[in-house]
Amino acid sequence: MTPHRSRLKRVGAAALVLFLFVAFCALGTWQLQRRTWKLDLIAHTEEQLAKPPTLAPGPEEWPAISSEQVYQPVSVTGVFLHDRESLVQAMTKLGSGYWVITPLQTEQGFLVLVNRGFVDQAHRDQGTRIDTSASGKVQVTGLLRLTEPDGRLFQANDPVASRWYSRDVQAMGAAHGLASDSLAPYFIDVGVGSAEQEWPVGGLTVIQFRNTHLGYALTWYALAAMTVWGAWRLLREP
Image 1 (cartoon, rainbow, N blue to C red):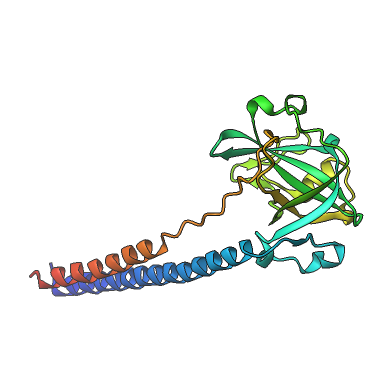
Image 2: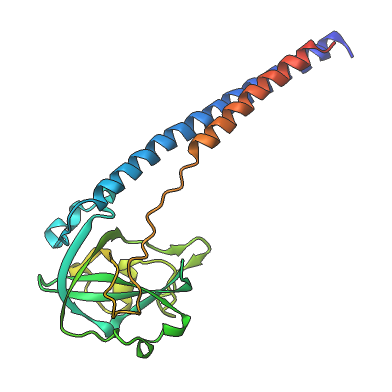
Protein backbone atom coordinates (compact mmCIF):
# COMPACT_ATOMS: atom_id res chain seq x y z
CA MET A 1 0.00 0.00 0.00
CA THR A 2 1.33 3.43 -0.94
CA PRO A 3 2.00 6.00 1.79
CA HIS A 4 -0.72 8.21 0.29
CA ARG A 5 -3.39 5.48 0.53
CA SER A 6 -2.22 4.60 4.02
CA ARG A 7 -2.62 8.21 5.08
CA LEU A 8 -6.12 8.36 3.60
CA LYS A 9 -7.13 5.22 5.47
CA ARG A 10 -5.82 6.62 8.73
CA VAL A 11 -7.66 9.92 8.18
CA GLY A 12 -10.88 8.06 7.35
CA ALA A 13 -10.55 5.85 10.41
CA ALA A 14 -9.88 8.87 12.62
CA ALA A 15 -12.93 10.66 11.23
CA LEU A 16 -15.10 7.59 11.87
CA VAL A 17 -13.81 7.24 15.43
CA LEU A 18 -14.44 10.93 16.11
CA PHE A 19 -17.97 10.68 14.73
CA LEU A 20 -18.80 7.60 16.81
CA PHE A 21 -17.29 9.12 19.95
CA VAL A 22 -19.33 12.33 19.60
CA ALA A 23 -22.50 10.40 18.74
CA PHE A 24 -22.18 8.02 21.71
CA CYS A 25 -21.46 10.90 24.10
CA ALA A 26 -24.44 12.86 22.76
CA LEU A 27 -26.74 9.87 23.24
CA GLY A 28 -25.46 9.37 26.79
CA THR A 29 -26.05 13.03 27.62
CA TRP A 30 -29.54 12.86 26.09
CA GLN A 31 -30.38 9.89 28.35
CA LEU A 32 -29.22 11.83 31.41
CA GLN A 33 -31.49 14.69 30.38
CA ARG A 34 -34.36 12.21 29.95
CA ARG A 35 -33.62 10.83 33.43
CA THR A 36 -33.89 14.31 34.94
CA TRP A 37 -37.21 14.83 33.14
CA LYS A 38 -38.50 11.43 34.31
CA LEU A 39 -37.55 12.09 37.95
CA ASP A 40 -39.34 15.46 37.82
CA LEU A 41 -42.39 13.75 36.31
CA ILE A 42 -42.45 11.12 39.07
CA ALA A 43 -42.11 13.76 41.79
CA HIS A 44 -44.88 15.88 40.22
CA THR A 45 -47.20 12.86 39.92
CA GLU A 46 -46.66 11.86 43.56
CA GLU A 47 -47.41 15.43 44.57
CA GLN A 48 -50.62 15.40 42.51
CA LEU A 49 -51.82 12.11 43.99
CA ALA A 50 -51.33 13.42 47.52
CA LYS A 51 -53.73 16.32 46.95
CA PRO A 52 -57.35 16.18 48.17
CA PRO A 53 -60.00 15.99 45.43
CA THR A 54 -61.12 19.28 43.91
CA LEU A 55 -64.12 20.03 41.72
CA ALA A 56 -63.66 18.79 38.17
CA PRO A 57 -62.71 21.73 35.88
CA GLY A 58 -65.68 23.39 34.20
CA PRO A 59 -65.88 24.98 30.73
CA GLU A 60 -64.28 28.24 31.85
CA GLU A 61 -61.17 26.30 32.90
CA TRP A 62 -60.86 24.02 29.87
CA PRO A 63 -58.60 26.29 27.77
CA ALA A 64 -55.97 26.26 30.53
CA ILE A 65 -55.92 22.50 31.12
CA SER A 66 -52.46 21.00 30.55
CA SER A 67 -50.36 17.96 31.32
CA GLU A 68 -49.52 19.58 34.67
CA GLN A 69 -52.99 18.55 35.90
CA VAL A 70 -52.78 14.89 34.93
CA TYR A 71 -53.48 12.54 37.89
CA GLN A 72 -55.02 15.39 39.86
CA PRO A 73 -57.84 13.96 42.05
CA VAL A 74 -61.18 15.49 41.07
CA SER A 75 -64.80 15.04 42.07
CA VAL A 76 -68.03 15.69 40.19
CA THR A 77 -71.73 15.00 40.68
CA GLY A 78 -74.21 14.09 37.96
CA VAL A 79 -76.18 11.39 36.15
CA PHE A 80 -74.64 8.65 33.98
CA LEU A 81 -75.84 8.26 30.39
CA HIS A 82 -75.52 4.48 30.19
CA ASP A 83 -77.05 4.29 26.71
CA ARG A 84 -73.95 6.08 25.33
CA GLU A 85 -71.35 3.79 26.82
CA SER A 86 -68.09 3.01 24.98
CA LEU A 87 -65.75 0.08 25.49
CA VAL A 88 -62.02 0.58 25.03
CA GLN A 89 -59.76 -2.44 24.67
CA ALA A 90 -57.50 -2.80 27.71
CA MET A 91 -54.93 -5.06 29.29
CA THR A 92 -54.73 -4.97 33.09
CA LYS A 93 -53.55 -7.14 35.96
CA LEU A 94 -56.97 -8.83 35.70
CA GLY A 95 -56.28 -9.84 32.10
CA SER A 96 -57.58 -8.59 28.75
CA GLY A 97 -60.91 -6.84 28.45
CA TYR A 98 -62.28 -3.32 28.22
CA TRP A 99 -62.44 0.03 29.96
CA VAL A 100 -66.06 1.10 30.42
CA ILE A 101 -66.33 4.76 29.37
CA THR A 102 -69.65 6.39 30.27
CA PRO A 103 -70.68 10.05 29.80
CA LEU A 104 -71.76 11.88 32.95
CA GLN A 105 -74.22 14.78 32.75
CA THR A 106 -72.94 17.00 35.53
CA GLU A 107 -74.90 19.28 37.83
CA GLN A 108 -72.95 22.19 36.35
CA GLY A 109 -74.41 21.43 32.90
CA PHE A 110 -71.38 20.07 31.07
CA LEU A 111 -70.57 16.50 30.09
CA VAL A 112 -67.51 14.51 31.08
CA LEU A 113 -66.47 11.00 30.10
CA VAL A 114 -65.82 8.71 33.06
CA ASN A 115 -63.69 5.59 32.91
CA ARG A 116 -65.79 3.58 35.37
CA GLY A 117 -63.33 0.70 35.42
CA PHE A 118 -62.41 -2.59 33.79
CA VAL A 119 -64.61 -5.48 32.62
CA ASP A 120 -63.45 -8.82 31.26
CA GLN A 121 -64.80 -10.47 28.12
CA ALA A 122 -67.59 -12.19 30.07
CA HIS A 123 -68.93 -8.85 31.33
CA ARG A 124 -68.68 -6.86 28.14
CA ASP A 125 -72.46 -6.56 27.76
CA GLN A 126 -74.31 -4.29 30.17
CA GLY A 127 -76.82 -7.00 31.02
CA THR A 128 -74.09 -9.10 32.64
CA ARG A 129 -73.16 -6.36 35.12
CA ILE A 130 -75.35 -6.03 38.23
CA ASP A 131 -74.44 -2.42 38.97
CA THR A 132 -74.11 -1.09 35.45
CA SER A 133 -77.52 0.55 35.36
CA ALA A 134 -76.99 2.64 38.46
CA SER A 135 -79.42 5.49 37.91
CA GLY A 136 -80.01 8.81 39.56
CA LYS A 137 -77.49 11.26 40.88
CA VAL A 138 -74.03 9.91 41.70
CA GLN A 139 -70.79 11.43 42.91
CA VAL A 140 -67.69 10.43 41.01
CA THR A 141 -64.19 10.80 42.42
CA GLY A 142 -61.14 9.88 40.43
CA LEU A 143 -58.07 11.06 38.57
CA LEU A 144 -58.08 13.63 35.79
CA ARG A 145 -56.62 12.24 32.57
CA LEU A 146 -56.03 13.93 29.21
CA THR A 147 -57.65 12.65 26.03
CA GLU A 148 -55.81 9.95 24.06
CA PRO A 149 -56.46 10.77 20.40
CA ASP A 150 -56.35 8.47 17.36
CA GLY A 151 -55.65 5.09 18.95
CA ARG A 152 -52.59 2.94 19.55
CA LEU A 153 -49.57 2.29 17.35
CA PHE A 154 -50.77 0.27 14.33
CA GLN A 155 -54.32 0.22 15.76
CA ALA A 156 -56.42 3.23 14.85
CA ASN A 157 -59.75 3.87 16.51
CA ASP A 158 -62.76 2.96 14.35
CA PRO A 159 -65.77 4.98 15.59
CA VAL A 160 -68.09 3.55 12.91
CA ALA A 161 -67.48 0.00 14.15
CA SER A 162 -67.31 1.14 17.81
CA ARG A 163 -63.81 -0.28 18.00
CA TRP A 164 -61.72 1.75 20.42
CA TYR A 165 -58.06 1.30 21.33
CA SER A 166 -57.55 4.58 23.18
CA ARG A 167 -59.70 6.92 25.24
CA ASP A 168 -60.23 9.58 22.58
CA VAL A 169 -62.66 11.99 24.24
CA GLN A 170 -63.59 14.02 21.15
CA ALA A 171 -64.05 11.00 18.89
CA MET A 172 -66.18 9.14 21.43
CA GLY A 173 -68.31 12.20 22.05
CA ALA A 174 -68.90 12.67 18.33
CA ALA A 175 -69.74 8.97 17.87
CA HIS A 176 -72.48 9.27 20.50
CA GLY A 177 -73.80 12.64 19.39
CA LEU A 178 -72.51 14.58 22.38
CA ALA A 179 -72.14 18.31 21.83
CA SER A 180 -68.43 19.07 21.55
CA ASP A 181 -68.76 22.51 23.15
CA SER A 182 -70.21 20.99 26.33
CA LEU A 183 -67.89 17.95 26.53
CA ALA A 184 -64.87 18.24 28.81
CA PRO A 185 -61.52 17.74 27.01
CA TYR A 186 -60.45 15.23 29.65
CA PHE A 187 -61.82 12.06 31.22
CA ILE A 188 -61.87 10.80 34.79
CA ASP A 189 -60.46 7.46 35.97
CA VAL A 190 -62.56 6.36 38.94
CA GLY A 191 -61.02 4.96 42.09
CA VAL A 192 -61.77 1.68 43.85
CA GLY A 193 -65.50 0.99 44.01
CA SER A 194 -67.60 -0.18 46.93
CA ALA A 195 -67.64 -3.79 48.14
CA GLU A 196 -70.95 -4.39 46.35
CA GLN A 197 -69.62 -3.12 43.03
CA GLU A 198 -68.08 -6.05 41.19
CA TRP A 199 -68.07 -4.85 37.57
CA PRO A 200 -66.65 -2.57 36.32
CA VAL A 201 -63.57 -2.79 38.54
CA GLY A 202 -62.20 0.66 39.31
CA GLY A 203 -58.88 1.76 40.75
CA LEU A 204 -56.72 0.06 38.11
CA THR A 205 -55.02 3.19 36.81
CA VAL A 206 -51.36 2.33 36.25
CA ILE A 207 -49.16 5.02 37.77
CA GLN A 208 -45.69 3.64 37.18
CA PHE A 209 -42.93 5.24 35.18
CA ARG A 210 -40.13 3.09 33.82
CA ASN A 211 -36.85 4.82 34.62
CA THR A 212 -33.88 3.04 33.05
CA HIS A 213 -32.25 6.15 31.58
CA LEU A 214 -29.17 5.97 33.83
CA GLY A 215 -28.39 2.47 32.59
CA TYR A 216 -28.77 3.56 28.98
CA ALA A 217 -26.56 6.61 29.59
CA LEU A 218 -23.78 4.49 31.09
CA THR A 219 -24.04 2.11 28.12
CA TRP A 220 -23.60 4.91 25.60
CA TYR A 221 -20.67 6.40 27.54
CA ALA A 222 -19.08 2.95 27.75
CA LEU A 223 -19.38 2.59 23.97
CA ALA A 224 -17.72 6.00 23.57
CA ALA A 225 -14.84 4.85 25.79
CA MET A 226 -14.55 1.56 23.89
CA THR A 227 -14.38 3.49 20.62
CA VAL A 228 -11.42 5.51 21.88
CA TRP A 229 -9.75 2.37 23.25
CA GLY A 230 -10.24 0.57 19.94
CA ALA A 231 -8.79 3.51 18.02
CA TRP A 232 -5.77 3.55 20.32
CA ARG A 233 -5.19 -0.18 19.72
CA LEU A 234 -5.39 0.27 15.99
CA LEU A 235 -2.94 3.19 16.03
CA ARG A 236 -0.41 1.00 17.82
CA GLU A 237 -0.48 -1.53 14.97
CA PRO A 238 2.15 -1.10 12.25
